[in-house]
Length: 190
Image 1: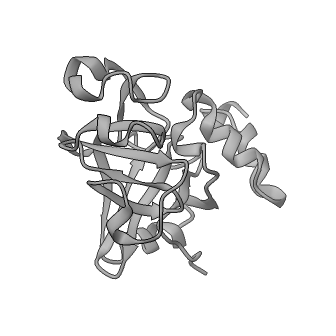
Image 2: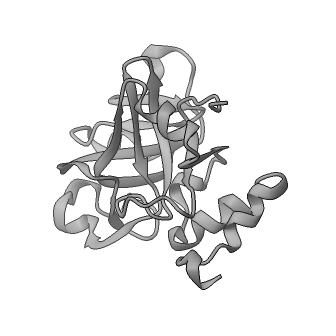
C-alpha cells in the first residue's frame, strides 16, 4: 500500500536507498499532485555562505548560514523556504512574494526585499536545486519502500544541526520505523 503524501510532509530516505543524490536525505515536500512532486533536501548544507551568492539575504538565513544542496534538479537556481511567526489568512495580507506550503512555512521569492519581511521572519533557508518527480514516480518509489513519509515539525526544515536530522526524524517515528535510525551507513557492516 502506498502511503498518503501531501505538501509539508517529510520524505526520509530508507537506509538502503541506492541513489547517492538522496542517501540519508530528508526532503521537505513543497508540492505533490497528479502532475508530480517537488521538494528540497533539508539536511545537506554546502560550504558556500549565503553572503557569497545572495547578498541581500545575507544575515537573514538560519544557522548554518550557508546554501543547502536542495537536490539534483535545477542546481543553477535557488529556492528559499521561509517561516513566519504569524501569517494572516487573507491573501492580500501575506508577505509579498511568499507562497504558503504548510502553516507559516512557505516559499519566498528571492527577488523580494528582505527588509519588507524581516519583522515577522522566524527562519529562512536557501537551496540550490531541488528534488523532482514526474507523475506517479514518487508513488512508485514509495510502494518500493524507498522513502518513509513523516509529518514535519515546524523546525525540521530549518534545523541548526542538519547533519543529525535523518536520525532525529526517524527516532521520533512510531514502532519499528524508529529502529531505522540505528542502521549503519553500510548495512553490510551490521
